[in-house]
Length: 95
Length: 416
Image (cartoon, rainbow over all chains, first blue to last red; front, top):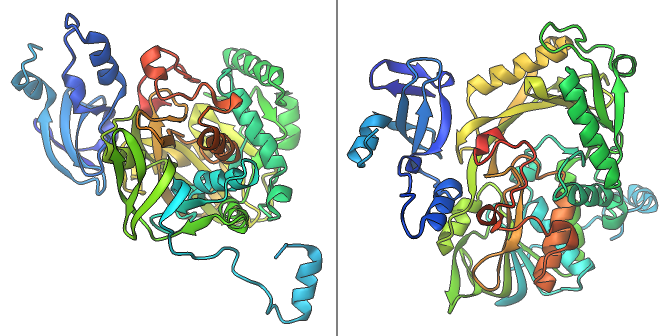
């Protein structure tokens, strides 16, 4: 697979480390009432779809940036690559 | 018809006209006591033990393709019980014992070959860890044997003992481990289950579940609705897909694992060798091909094919530990989809929906577990209570902090 890095252009996926579903960006509020259930679901449960999947990749063998890659888990086709920090900010994370 | 030497001779003398199909091809009935979704090794084994041990006769196995077309035909055929943790060892040892009697139980030649499995040791720390593992195995009645470098040199003189990074300093052997002809496992279980009256319904895809008042009443399929008292799901690889039909999110990611086979060679490799440090393991099939594999590709996939970086990594591992493998040509490679669970261990449990049971999360250890998985899942379906060897494989263990994490790497499925 080739991941089209927003800053560096097309890179071999072997340069990257895979973390998992991009929903990991949305860390639950540790002060919330339902925090036990929320952190259990956050840490352990996954949608695991067959089809389009937004996921986190780390460019370990490159600029060490985190990316959100939209990829089809049936065909391995990559349709969108974003900087994870941009995604996180639009979702209300400060960092 | 019972298979025997006498029958082979009799058929040979009468033109082989008496052989019958090994199982029927029935249309689904309107209602079964128990429906098993998934005609792979685990589903068919469940049907066999439900009928033979638990006396259930109104049972159907529903398979979307053909039986044995999934992971039971895609693995590297190794059986073993060399685990460390209490939740795992008794279960896998139970499985290995069932393997030892499988062919007599099924009246089917599954080519069970206890040729032994050996994990290589490269450092003092690794030797300590393997001694601990061997002791844990022996405490649970499994066999384990610590091998010195000299013993390994006598058995496997062709290994690379003086590698600069991973010199071979010993090994942990399990002599009762080995290999089994994987397709024959599916066929043998199917034939046996069918002989007890289990309906094996192929080319019948489950499209949904009928659930009323929190109780599962049956399954919607491409051949119409089929009612059931209880429904068991054994579709590892596609568990996420199936259980999403009832709105369940699982502690599982589906990932692709590749396997490889070389051209046929004369016998060179007596047992199974695992080179964990280099992400490589290998055995030789009875047909002569070197069967080997390594790590997961490491990302979510339902594609049943992997990518080239892992091919390169596995071949490098092979060259590092067994340089002569470089003279063999790679014949085929393929991918299978693994239910990678969040602690590397399986789940065999009830679901929150009454009458719906789940068996999955086998990571890449599902094949060796086939007989025990079928046995304990049959127990769960027949008695609505977990089998004594599978009490730890609960769906809620992640919430309760009772993970069974052999590697201790946490909720990162591609590291298990």
